[in-house]
Image 1 (cartoon, rainbow, N blue to C red):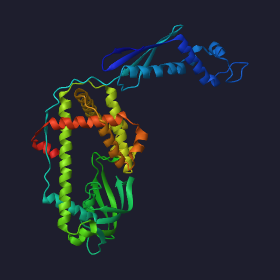
Image 2: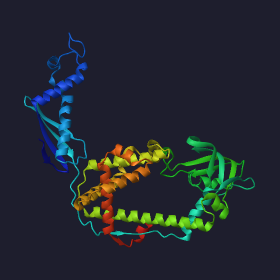
Image 3: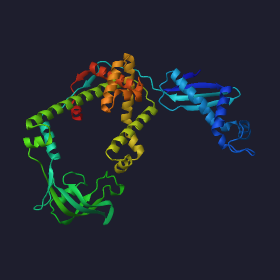
Image 4: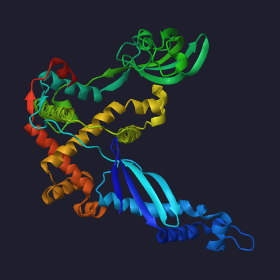
Length: 435
């Protein structure tokens, strides 16, 4: 039987012991697992009897695996029996191993207790951005830009908006620097994708021209040796292309959409923008409500929970970047960050996430919120649609009553409850700007 002792900072000591007979069985198991490691004169490797191993090497040589065999199942049973919500790896302290067996203590960090404040009827700003003719036209203009073509220009110099094909080579103090050379490079003037001042000085030159431009690298440039440095670039223009945007008429609409007229397209865009604005406003309001409820609560969050959340966020970020073909190492190198800097920047948001989750969990418990069988089935059906599979496959993968899925449902219901009970207020001007 485990003895549970609550310590400071959400730590718990689990005191356990096993009898000598149980420990001897664990030693025998450790011996069988490791006997090929032992060599004693007169015996082939792996054939040394247990008693001789203990005599020649000492019983302690078998302790590591024996202790694991004893501790792991006892620890799991103690956690389950005492309903401990462990958030860290256990720290083992073996107090004694003698003729009576083994006494040991496992110290773990558990989810902290949350002291809820006001959670029903909290105030939170609600703001929905206005959809206008200008916002609709902006989307249509973007569609025109996406369907534009590039046509060669030969009768004038390059100007902003043109795409030029250039060779370039950069020099610092008269010496070419690494990464400063390119051939047949396509650059859109006005895109601000190059060093400030570079594109402006390319404009005004014609095909075949070779010229030199002078720039100063930004102080926050990713290459340490070029930060704030003056440099010159030798540039040659091979080609100039002008963007040709299609005429905005019904024929254009037919080419790029399922609609026949410009009015139909505008109506559809307005509807989509209204739905997006509504969702954005709702999500922002919900986040503000959860933030207010969390602000009213008191909880001491263990460092390990924040560290775990930082790791999760870093993995999420790396996964998103990999989908765009960007490696995390490449991103860190470009931004001049170390991995420690990268993770340190995530800590404030990790703290917010962890506290919000703990508070929502506490509110759900207070409200005795549960996931019904119907809600569970509906969740599986929605997941099946999202993953393009069927419910039975998900049941095989997750089991009939997956606790994670049930927790997700309960959390969502709790958040919806809090938002439904909250009071919408008029946002301040700076909050509207953030929206």
